[in-house]
Length: 215
Image (cartoon, rainbow, N blue to C red; front, side, top):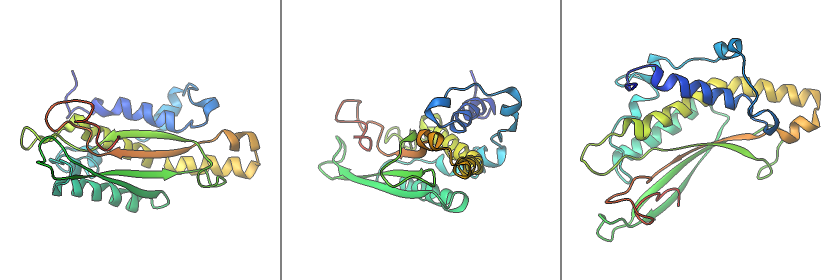
């Protein structure tokens, strides 16, 4: 059993995710990556993933119940991360409001965070995407619940993975465009990071008390 403090906890899924991202065309999505190739992929570092001071992970390790200040802080962290490190990605939010079994008729706001990057030759709405999805909210009970593995770490792994491969993706797309490889251009896909709000049940898991943001 790996603990959250163990680098292995996120190193292996992080490397697997990056390997997939570097081969985003449908034809090559499952092509094997050599040991030498894997060694070139940047590893997650304590600077980003330390649970107390890590620039990517630690801001997510707070109670982040939908509609609370903690939830808003995490959403701002996502926006700041892309603004500082991946400024050419397109950012948007998807907003909704719903009542919950504990809200006494009051509608709770739910905000999904969306970031996309598409090949430069594509037109809006005319490109497929590989979607990387996790939820960022935490449970309302017990009070102060953080949900490190469910689902702060997955959110952090996705952010670090797309940052690590961003420049390589630009080079790959520039090469395809320069060569005028129409078949490769047709097969290439964009990326979507989708961080969902309101996945957790507020009282007990049912079809109506769960997946608020996803629904």
